[in-house]
Picture 1 (cartoon, rainbow, N blue to C red):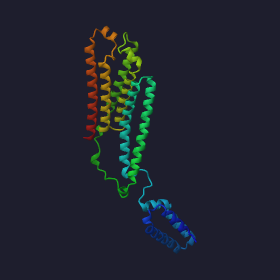
Picture 2: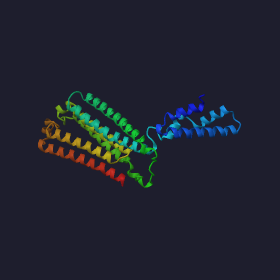
Picture 3: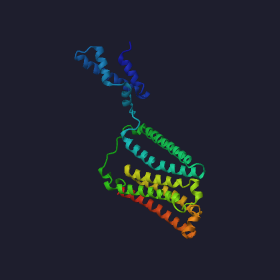
Picture 4: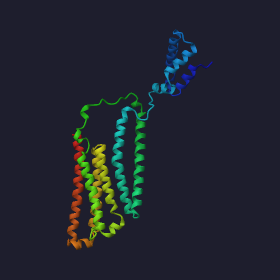
Length: 304
């Protein structure tokens, strides 16, 4: 006759590799028999003693996982911190750059600016979901590798703590960076719309390419917010520098091609076009280089 113990052991062995089942079955039956015998000595009924012994052992699937060294969690404590750090780094560096690149491609193809930004947002969100899925999948697979069964989290060393002032972008830098970008964009729009002579070439303004300036400013502000709330390291500094390079390439290309400034504005001001073009190019390059250097300085201060 099949007993409750037989059913319990059979269920537990289902989750055990074939080569280990015989030894574990003997060990498990012995443990159950010992637990039942102890309860019988206290005067419990035999059937009640068996139920209590099996209840104390718990879910047979969980017991089998413990015997087999198979984790019942997706990401364990030995890998969880590495997992969250990598995921955070990719989401705060790769995704903003993808959004920026998709915006540039969308504007280059022509069409409404709103559509280009909407498509870029969709692409960035898709990339974010792929990043989260594949990083989780890789870490879950590593968690279940045989070499991870007996691994414990590395001993934490207090010496790895960063200096408090350098851990994040300070509030002054955050407010300064976001304010400057916002004010410059607002001034550009106000002068273009309400000034006596538009500064930006009407063709460039009407094409919607100037929306890219807003996109660059938004991504720039986004990096400052990441630095303040999440932290700033080398990956953020590299992504920040890539954004600066993209800004320089587009800015120099548009300015050197004579498509940035309005000819009527240059005539009204009495400025030679060639000199103004070079001044704008130099200013754009210097701003981007200075911004990129500051990004790496922040990362270095955090590691110091």
